[in-house]
Image 1 (cartoon, rainbow, N blue to C red):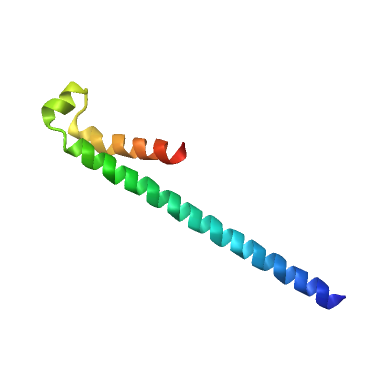
Image 2 (image 1 turned 120 degrees about the vertical axis):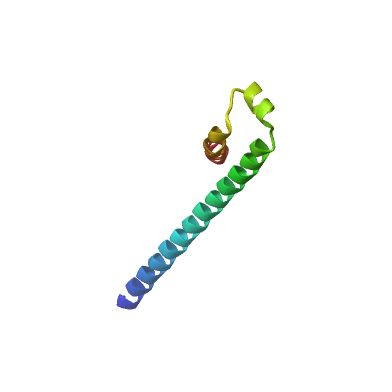
Length: 77
């Protein structure tokens, strides 16, 4: 009986370790996707000339913040 209890305890530990590992991988994938969206958005915004930015009511100093906001929104929903 003690062997069975010990075995189920080990199985529980393995299951929790696998779940934790899966959650770490999922978080890393989420962060990677967010970073990719940030880089792509920032690149697109930086390709706009000053006149195009002014037409949108933007300045170059706003670009990183806008790209970060866009990446967070896209990654979260």
